[in-house]
Image 1 (cartoon, protein in one colour):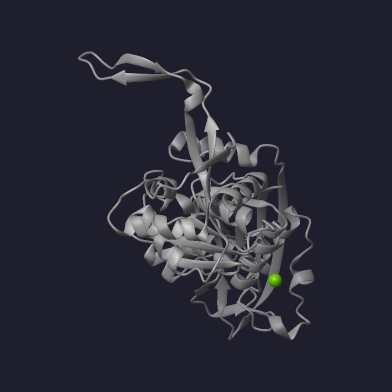
Image 2 (cartoon, rainbow, N blue to C red):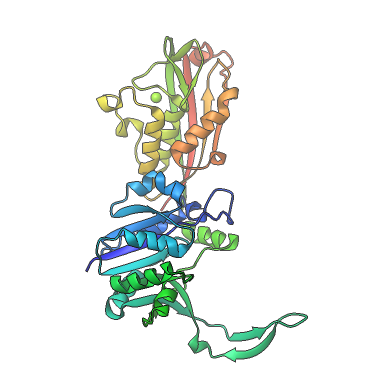
Length: 384
Ligand code: MG
């Protein structure tokens, strides 16, 4: 059975924060969307995954997404149903199409399987949960709403996603949506076409993240039980005439630069060792040996980016990094923000979680005499 999954992540609402659309907000060191993408793309019964993104993001999708096997990115439309229709148009034959909302990052493999099975058997199925509270019908009154009646709660289910359909059933629903019928989910369109939509038992853990409180609870859930781990890094390079001075990826005008096989960026090298050290993954020399011609002249920012990716692949979240650069001259204060921004981008964390400080060595030793530059770094990660 060929199963296509669609993640509807075309919304550009920024209600949950200034950091952009909610599907890209951080949830335990990864964007919320990545949790959904992993859950679906790792599922053995899903053959392909279409991720619908806002048009501007779809034109240049994040690297982690482009790197995912099974994944195709499609530009979304004005409404959710338009986004799903855009994705549907790109499907080249499938038995079952499963639609999931990017705001539900905790979808389980079992729930995905149940939804696929029900759609294959009945043509259309949604995950939904029973209500445990007594349900009241109310009417507005001056002074506040009043109860008009009690609805038997056995008749009430709260719809979630996944919603799954046989291809031909979804085709009719999408066509109805295109004819001008508006709906907040595809099941409503399928109902309008006259198809019976079955309910599979949803999952109370499969919450939809809508409010700041939802996001805070989700973050607490993701990080619960994780252990903080610290790592240290240190580096030193000789300063010689005729070399560029690169600190944290920023080229700084100076009479001297650091001597080394690569660009000899002490801030990056110390930060790289700190994050690798926190994850017990060895050090920069193990992963990027200077005997390997691949790393000759390599940008150390790129090595830091790769090290951060290794740490993340091992299941850790990078919390923060603090770097001390020890250098007699020139003063690096004017460049600190640029260095922080560059390190943060390479580490894949916000710049407000990267600190960089400049120190001199008070004229003492090789660093103090201007013959060398050194850096220390500390990284904190949360283990899996
Ligand atoms: Mg070095």
